[in-house]
Image (cartoon, rainbow over all chains, first blue to last red; front, side, top):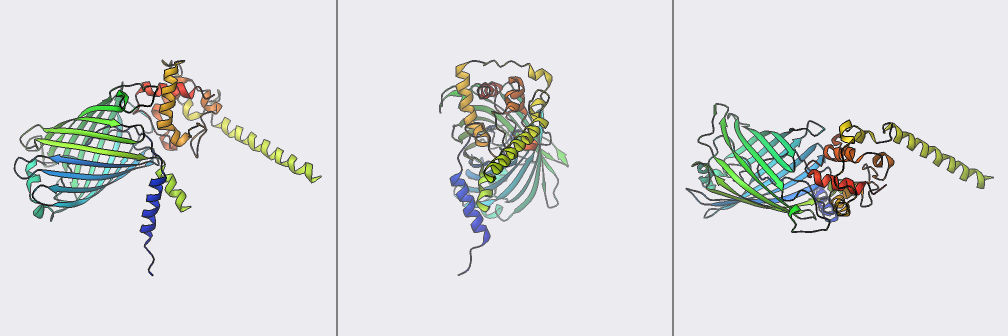
Length: 292
Length: 135
């Protein structure tokens, strides 16, 4: 009888570690697109399921879910794997690719502005519609290409971001400058994302509670494209404003929702995003123990 | 003879180990006995006053926050797990509340302690209120 491959054991071990791991509560900011300087706590694994629903001006509306596995490798390095899908109404549902993201904090102390360096490798198809960022001349018409055609385009891209983030009196302000390079012979594409958020109550209440104000974070984010290295511009690309509300439950679960509104004719009228996350404590430690 | 010698040797070894531990502890602490990563707080931070000092509600909130955010590494009894330090140690308890709240904001990223700047400062003071009851 053939032996199962090693990765099957690894998957089983990871599943066991997940079952054994208790949950904790992170200090995540609620953004869908922008990033702050708050990284995953070391050894913790956060599993996140998000969905992006968009209305199309020409073409069919679509829904694009993605799954994230976010792991705190160290206190200054977070690594993350994304798996993307989409379903376009009246067409088809398909898997559109994966992304592997890494975020590093180069400075070991807190400052007024805290930089984070972001590097991501994307292996997606042209049918990917998660819209995790807007770059170059991304606009709503590029999402109107039928799945049967768009799925034949394969994109291998390197995405970099400079994340600048500050905390002041309970507010978080994050600015992201995005540069994305298709590893074929295409120019650099640029984009931006800006986020602002604050918990509804700054101090915690003495009792455990689910619906108290301290568990809710409200905010807004703005994001859009900035053209390419050959033509830097804010026109003929899309821009969005998206209020956000996040509900953080004490036992490691959080729910987020964000209706995004297109700010020009090149944008989708509505991008409705929602998601749920769950954080597993000491995941890395438990996996290591299973192999010792 | 062995009945006396072996316990005596064990006692001597444990005293030596304790002394070595104390030396290590001392070498990682400043002249007040505060652990160096905490003692690196700016002098001004030492003087920061805890606005919640002595408030029972803040203490209860601090304990709740400790269990949500800190217990995973430091243990529910705060006595430390693995590399996470025992928070009952004099090296922690001798620090001023201001130093502790500064340390919670900055963390010690290179050594695995995350920055908790994402928590509003009010909640960090509540955690410090609880930590100061552990002495």
